[in-house]
Amino acid sequence: MLNRNDYTPLYVQLQNIIRNDIMSGKYKDGEMIPSEAQMMKLYDVTRTTIRKAVADLVNEGLLVQAQGKGIFVTLREVKHNIWNFSGFTDYANKKHETPISHVIEHKIETIDGESYLKLVRTRGIQNASNTSWLTIDHSLIPLAIFPGIDQYDFSQFSLYSTMMDKYKVRPHNAMLQIIPIIGDATTKSLLQYEEDTPLLKAVGTVYSDDGVIIEKVEVIYGPNVDFKMATTI
Amino acid sequence: MLNRNDYTPLYVQLQNIIRNDIMSGKYKDGEMIPSEAQMMKLYDVTRTTIRKAVADLVNEGLLVQAQGKGIFVTLREVKHNIWNFSGFTDYANKKHETPISHVIEHKIETIDGESYLKLVRTRGIQNASNTSWLTIDHSLIPLAIFPGIDQYDFSQFSLYSTMMDKYKVRPHNAMLQIIPIIGDATTKSLLQYEEDTPLLKAVGTVYSDDGVIIEKVEVIYGPNVDFKMATTI
DNA sequence: CAGTGGTCTAGACCACCCT
DNA sequence: GGGTGGTCTAGACCACTGT
Image (cartoon, rainbow over all chains, first blue to last red; front, side, top):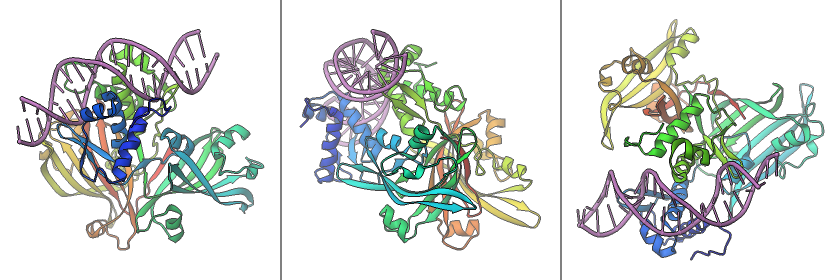
């Protein structure tokens, strides 16, 4: 039942109840769950609260609503919409998820006489019980522009926040190429999937306001990541 | 302004207005749009309606809301797109190549009580001696908006030119999702490649100035197409 | 017809952010 | 403090679905 003294919003509590009922098998795939009117009585909240809870679950892809029929369970892949470079952390927070980074590689590398911090990370979100890894990021950060940036621990701190806060350099735009790939064994194990699902990789360069290259980046997106964009024609 | 006699829900009308204001550059990337309270006065609807409109656009990834701050545009504008929807013809001409279209399917189809022209084409460029096919396009064009558009031969005429010239409807913006796929046998034979190279597919919706859906589109890009973009962070 | 979700109104109180 | 979004209440009328 709902706890009105809890600081957790009622609609979140309600979502958890519904999610649980689905996961525990009380409501099975394709089956109808109680109608909005029934849930109003059942949980003693208004329809707005019910609809907010349901709308979010519809958005997650766990439920579908059909006018005149009811609310039905549709178990399928949960898709996320982050192709953004701009802030994995922001994205995760917005979704009420906890962002996680794991540093795989962190070393200084010299390429064509230039020193870079090479950073390889996996990034994901952690909810309640389990962690899902979403991307593998390879970054090269020029030490000439960010001297000493190799001291920071980027499993804890956001790369872009550090650039802005400590170096007063703001990532501004990026040139990217999108490439479809078949993940190799390492990729599969890092992103925890099995089949030969093709993935997306973005390869490109990130520039500051001044047009200086501040990062060369390569991001592999896992099978659960949605890559959405808007464009003018 | 909103039209209360229109059968279109107010929040949809509102979404179209906001989407348009973003696409037209009235609200720029990163900028704040009017607050919920301001929009209540501006459009004379309740906050619920505003919030519904905004919530959907947040979900589309066009806006973000920040408590205590406001509603902000997060348009990741694609500036250079080799793959553009805006006119395969234009693109080819710019490259001094001759564009070619081949119509594979051209028929009327009814989906959910709506009639559409279903158009499947392969498109490519022809230079000197040989032709290379670059994309496979699936389009659904609503006949309610383009009555009689099925009479035109789209191996000869550009779809968008026809829309503009004959129907005075201008494609304005698109919402797309990019998906990596493995081509099936048909795809391989149409795009003339052999190996199990993964390809890119764009699935989305094209809107006119008025926010009306004028095309549902699915484009498969062949192995020779570069998918590049520039974006602000 | 009764039951379902879809839309909308008119309020209320709160937590958060900035100055 | 004043403005912002976040949550919630208590209604209303409508369109759609099934029997």
